[in-house]
Length: 422
Image 1 (cartoon, rainbow, N blue to C red):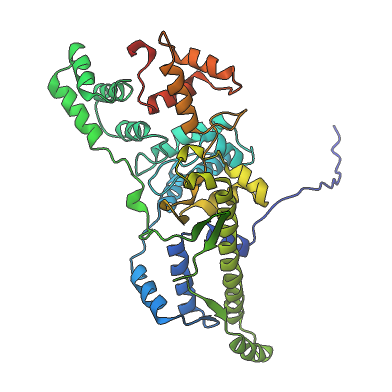
Image 2 (image 1 turned 135 degrees about the vertical axis):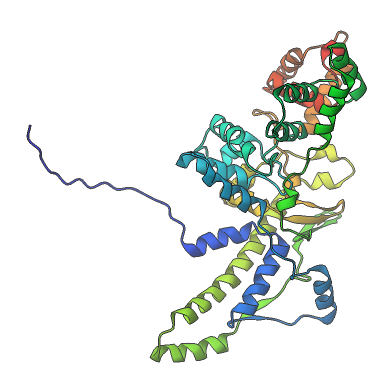
């Protein structure tokens, strides 16, 4: 058998992040407090960056609001990503795990639905792949409980990772899955009838009470909540403004740069050139970050202006993907922008991402609150108790395309018992 050698050319496109672009992306997800700390650090370390003096009143307010001497701790995100090295997982699982970690908020809760994470990945990964990584990898990371989708799951993750007898774990999981969870005495009575002693039941209940419902907060270094934006409602509309007060105004020392450039002609200095480029990058990136946050905030508030009235049920469904398509960004960029960003509203300061409401239906825009009201109205008008399956069929006749498990989930959120107990 002869061996022949041949040359073949193949074109292939790859997207690679430059170091400066990666730093700009990382800058997007910093909170206002973290960004100000970063700017202060650059001002101290880089001689080519100057901070403009502001009015004395503003400076006093600025010093009172922020304490830049707080010891920096590892963030929850950094802690979780570092632990991935302990798992024998492939490249795709690492990418999915990091994607999920980016969607975990400061309390440790998974802030996005699985289908939203699929959209954020630009459908590179499927829902079942994301779910598998969430359950088999993220739910095994410390602090136990992170990546939870509801409080019951948060408790289950912690219980399953504790060195408890299997019998006790089974009892606790049975307590958590009981549909009469709102009445602990009824649950206790039912388990006593099954043969469990009061001591065993109380011991299991103590394990539940000892669970941390915000496991991520112990790792978060954000010490202050400061709003980036403020919404002002007017008679015929609204304004969404970036809050300039207490935000440092920085500029480049062009005179120093010119003097240094003259010297660099005769003697090259790589470190000085890097400092100059870093100063220019910081100025443009901070401005771009603030402009992008304002642009996203303006779009979100324009969609949710009704929410700031007297009826919160008027809030519209809104997703990362919709915002991305409207303002020309990738959904993953929108996800980063929304991390730790707050807005000052007539209803008080709130996370910007709280104004995003996922539609529970894939065919119509129906918020979870609207679905809960539909379920409540359907059950209120029933002559004979309807199962979740029958409620789903009835609502699907209106074109909602809902699964039985979706009805079950939001019925429980309404604190409505199943048809068996109604």
